[in-house]
Length: 162
Image 1 (cartoon, rainbow, N blue to C red):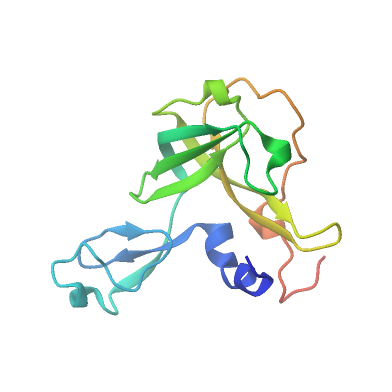
Image 2 (cartoon, rainbow, N blue to C red):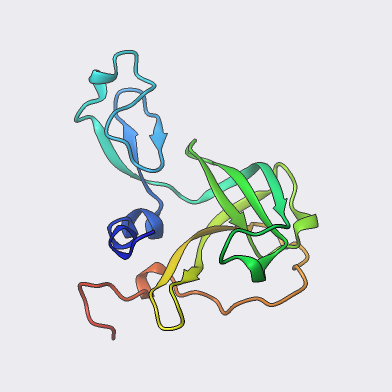
C-alpha cells in the first residue's frame, strides 16, 4: 500500500469508521456512498451517514496460517478470522493475544490497534486493527511486540508530537 493511500485511509483504519443507511439502517465497513440493501439503490444517495463501529464482535470463521504472506514470516502460526461485529458488518482480521488453538467459532473479540508492518528499517510504520479475545485465553508461545499506543496517542501529520 502506498504511503499516500495509507494516510488517506487513516480515519477508517484507526477509528473503524463506516457508514450507515438512514433508509434501512444497514451499517457498512468500509464506508459506502450507496446502500445495496435498499430496493432502489438511488433511494440511499445522500442518505448514507458516517457511523462508528464499536469493534465488538464474534468469530464467524477462521484459519490458522502456517505459510505467511511476505512481511509476516515472524508471526506464524497466526489466526486470520472473519469477525461479525455487533453492528452487522463482517471484518477480516488477525486474532492476537491468544494461542491459535484457543480460537474457536463464536469467540467474543474486540478490535485493538496494533503495528501491522514497517517499510524498511527507517520507514513508515503502518498501524491497523486486529482482534483480541474478550475473555482471557492462553497466550501463544513466542515473541510478542510492545503494546501500541491508543489512536489518540498516535501523532497526526497535522500536529506536532507532544
